[in-house]
Length: 348
Image (tube, rainbow, N blue to C red; front, side, top):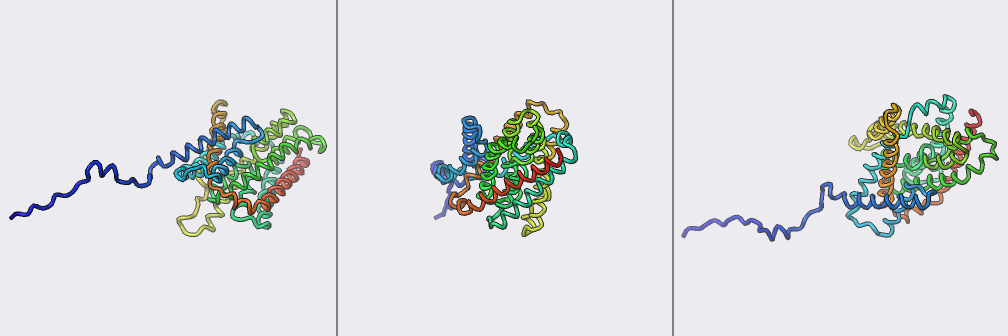
């Protein structure tokens, strides 16, 4: 009797259909999280239109925290939200450079430039030192210092992109600069005349001491067009300092990082992009309409990033250091307002 070797078995169509699928590893795994972030950006814009005193970035991070702690986000959205919190944040920082015209900054004169550098340095170093003395955890002292000294939530996002900070630390810093910036919008206009400041002096004070660009505009316009123009230009000078400070932090982290594969770049690529966009803006070849569209896109990208970061926050952990962080933020706000006022009095 001749034995016939068994034929190799091939899976039939039914078995192929019933085979469980493994986790997706392609771009499709990002779709759910990015869709959630896009929806949140739309909601944040709507909140800003209903309540103009609430910035879009603040509304976005608040929505992220609320959605996470109310368990409204499926686990499948996590990859996309993480992508938004990292990649979209860096893209937003790059576009931020289009707000910076180097010619406008240089037109301030060396005395004002020196004052702005001194204000940023004093606020950054003083806030960081105070946060450490109060025992704030993780990168909170560094992120709060960057947000108050430079340009609010945008600076916090840029620095967190280098430090790879915990989401709680990033959200705490964003919340504090938003709170104190909102206080500045109410308090600084009341001090305009009691402090004996001219329109130009008040505008420079607002630009040197208020955190977010939108908040600077809100404060500066209360004293007239001359004050608003000075406020915006001085504020842009502070934005220009974002690149060297982020690069310095990257160098510091590179020296202390463990292992050759974990060291960040000396100058992060998104900082190079920021400088490149500033150079393009300074040429004057970009139409005003394009700049407006880029500013809107920049805000949306940063809002999506902050929603992603907020969605990873555990409120219970955040509350544990709330009192000390609040004290640090209020002290930093008073510090930058006082140093900026002294500088304006000396130079204007």
